[in-house]
Structures are given as C-alpha cells and as structure tokens.
Length: 57
Image 1 (cartoon, rainbow, N blue to C red):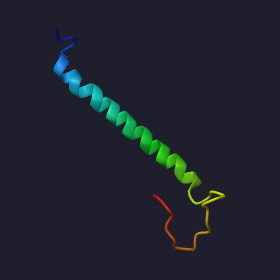
Image 2: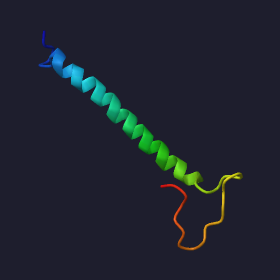
Image 3: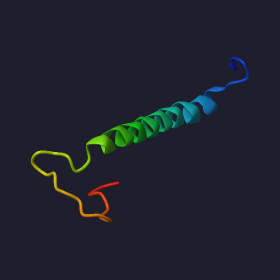
Image 4: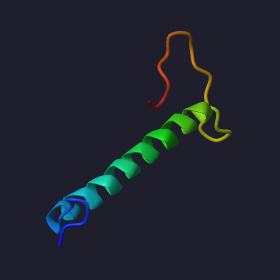
C-alpha cells in the first residue's frame, strides 16, 4: 500500500537516515556551543600563548 507515493521500502531507508541526520546536526550544535567554554575550565584551563591553537576544535 502506498500512501502519497511512499512505499514501505522507502520508509526503511528514510526513517533511519532522518534520525542519523538529526543526531549529526544536534551534535554539531552542541560542539559549537561548547567551544564557548574551551580552555576555561578551573581544572583543565590554561593560558594560551599568542598563536596557540585551542586544545580541541
């Protein structure tokens, strides 16, 4: 049975791919948010010298 031209075999591909893309996007957003706190931890923070790269991207 096709609903709006979508068959079951396409759903077997589309649903996991949609979940994967949503997870990938959320992970990127979280990484961008966490860059605000990079190298500022009380335990692991350090002063960066001019020209030093951050400890993680």
